[in-house]
Length: 216
Length: 92
Image (cartoon, chains in turn cyan, green):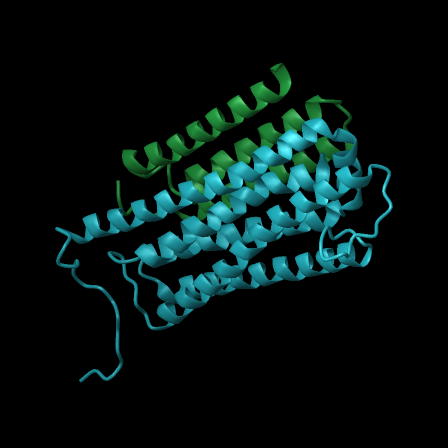
């Protein structure tokens, strides 16, 4: 007699013809969502490149005001989290929810570390008068208003990326809950793989943000 | 196509490759002065890293044709977007 509610899917939903088809359809939906993500960030990157071409000196000054060591550290944190996420997908596909749970928890911890570093970066910038809004901008740079434009793009792009990290943490909590309930098996792991795809796209966007903001 | 389990070793090698390329990005961008070529090199390395993430971490290497077409289409349309924007900016 079972009193524990288990959500594990043993058969496909009625509007699919097999579990395989259901899985592929779900995954394809996530992929289409990822395309919209790439388009959204793609537009911001075009803005970045156009204004960079027009105001190179401001971009150079802006980049030198950011601490590339913190950016590099956060890059490594995200890469490790991507690895543990990929490993969590591998674990659930092998039916090992326990191991997957551990990897998802590490991924979540990395996401928090990323946000903590970002918090210190943001508060430092705001403290130095480099926040381009709410009358907080007091910085006297050599490139004036164009430097402010750089920091508009910096805060919008890294902020939107940070928002994705926060949403990702929410998704991780959902996975943790379901993994602890032992929901997944070798045939049913769509949710883990879908969150994985999302998390890798977040990492992929940071791969471009890091050199463009901090290094170049 | 479905249910290809990526082994631990492959994931680990992917991670190490990405970390290695990150180190190369930092060294070439911060300590090697190539002038205008620095940006192009950084974007080239970033694109290699992005491809590694797409192929191995996001399983496109093992995935069906449909998801590959979806991903390539996204990149293609981004390139059209970038191409027109920059040709307008630099050649008008």
